[in-house]
Image (cartoon, rainbow, N blue to C red; front, side, top):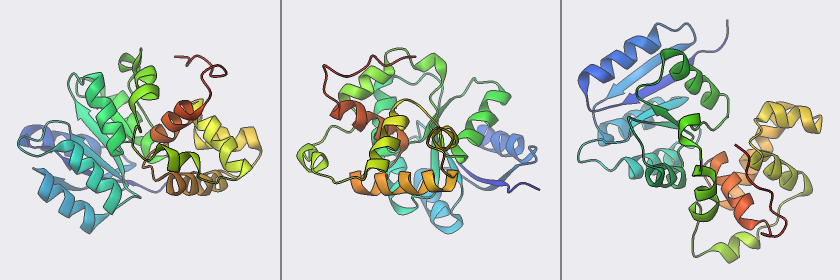
Amino acid sequence: MAKRILVLVIEDNRLVREGLAALLNAQPDFKVIAAAEGGSAGLLQVRETKPHVVLVDATLGSHDSHRLVESVRKEVPASKVIVMDLLPAQEDIIAFIKAGANGFIVKDATIEDFVKTIRSVADGADVVPASLTGTLLSHIVDQAVHRSTAAVLEAVQMTKREREITSLIAEGMSNKEIAQRLNIATYTVKSHVHNILEKLALHSRLQIAAHAHKSAPRSDSPTVSR
């Protein structure tokens, strides 16, 4: 039997929170280990349970969802974060990516898309709904991971293999696809990705892709394909 994906739900609407828990627990490969009403309680549950995936409502009342995502990724980096929203603006998506979010779910998505997104993120992918892409990637290239320490990032020493994998992540490849392309084991790719994240002080593959695009010479940079 495949390993179950442990999920923690942070949602301030009780009906939505309990509905999500029931929906996911009905799936044979999911187990909701906790459901919290707000950011503080949610972060405490993340620390205690260390789930594989954390579902975070983008609008947690008086709580700052962006800071919550950042705290989860810093304190429990093994936990992936998926942000849930009804109609997220590109600016909000970019802010969540900078905070370390690994994926997004539109709240009116089908059940199939909902569980597929969670499975993909748990497996190491970063997911943005197709309806939200458009010019999003170009915005990420220009704005995400923009910081005053850019010179430090330029000086980071990466191995040839790490640079190869960074380029393939920027092309949108999953760990499995990268492993097949480079003829290496998937767990080896995961190890390299972990090292890349640490060296660049980033939190997600989306941030790696953004950094790769931002660092590439504009004259040689390919147009981001959809």
